[in-house]
Structure formats: C-alpha cells, structure tokens
Length: 176
Image (cartoon, rainbow, N blue to C red; front, side, top):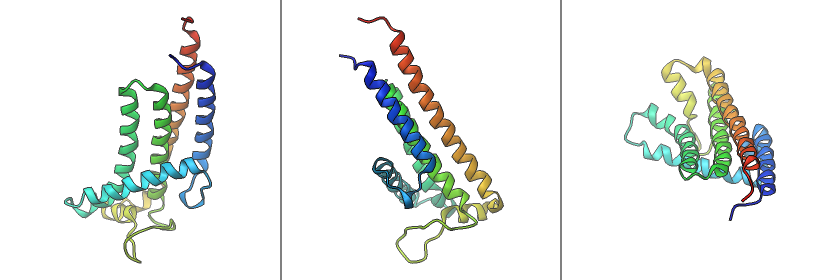
C-alpha cells in the first residue's frame, strides 16, 4: 500500500531541515543527533579507508580517508536509486552532501591545520597537508576544499529538487 502524500511532504520538510543544518554543521560543535550520527559513520569509513589502503604509497593512504568517506555516501545514493527507493535517495543525497562538506572542510584546512585531529598518537599528521604538500598544491587548499564543499551543496540542492519532483509526480498521478 503506497504511503499518503502528506508523509512525503513532511519527509521533504525534514530533508530541508537537514540541508539547512548541514550548511552549518561542524563535527566539533554539533548538537544535531542525526547529523552527528551520520558523521560518526562517515568518520569510521574515513579511518577504515586509510587502513584498507595500507599497501599503497603514503600519498594514497593519506587521501584514502576522505575519498572513502565521499565514495561510501555515493554508494549509498546509487544503491537507493538501484533499489528504486527514490525518496531514500533524497536522504542519501544529503548524506553525500555531508561527506563532501566534511572532506572539503578538511582539505581547506591543509595550510592552517586548525581542525582537531584524532589519531593513535599525540602527533597526528594532517592528511591533506601531506597530500597537497607532496603535489605542490598546498597554496590551493582553500580553493580545492571550497570546490569540493560547493559540489556537496549542489548535490544537496539537487537532492531536494529531486524530492520535490517525486512529490509533484505523485500528486499528478491519478488516484487508484
């Protein structure tokens, strides 16, 4: 039995709330339980991605965390689409936004290195400071990070628009 349209509209309102909250989200200052939970999972994927890349050169190991974080959320999005769970794909798209916003913020911090880092010892290497230094791109950290964050916002906006499209499509179908 299909869900009533008002549930989709309420769900979309919740997604809009998440989008706005994502624009202001920082892991160190979050009071949002939902976004903190999503970020906690992303962080676990980030760290696991470093471990999974252990056999690669150091520059790839350093980049693997953020790449894994973004890839994980993209996989969720495409899995929802493949399963034809389109409204779930709207939520997954917002999770992609979180992954890109988080990775972009980390990239943009490469020179400043002001974000609090967690690691197995007192001295933790900043992944993107290392990567961008090795590539000679350290002076472009804020541009690269800002671009990745902007891509995340565009994906978030696209997800919200897709949600509106789904609601309009459902409203335009004749009642059974």
